[in-house]
Image (cartoon, rainbow, N blue to C red; front, side):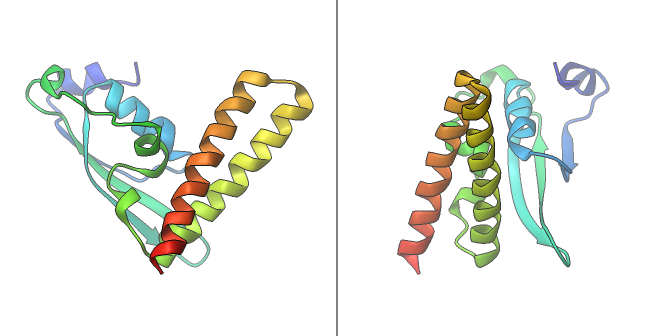
Length: 136
């Protein structure tokens, strides 16, 4: 899934990515295919904060014991979650708006499972924002 096997077959072992859509599904696909995120950065242009990440494929992807620590790693980023910048706080607030809107939409349309996933994301994001506020 996600082209991980094809990239491996082609000998590609390092990626630098700047997703234009939600980054959590990309992180999840990388983990599922044995890739390890090596770096993550927030890059700001005039209006948006974009995530740029690099990932490597170890010689034996199956040997990587714990690639996915928790939902927090997928949602916030295994490296970015340690950032305390205002840019990161701004990005988290933007993500919160998105997932709160998704949660409301799911409630209105009675999509329970998807709404519960959105609620878990909201909780993770609120906790991260609370940690950032407490460290100021």
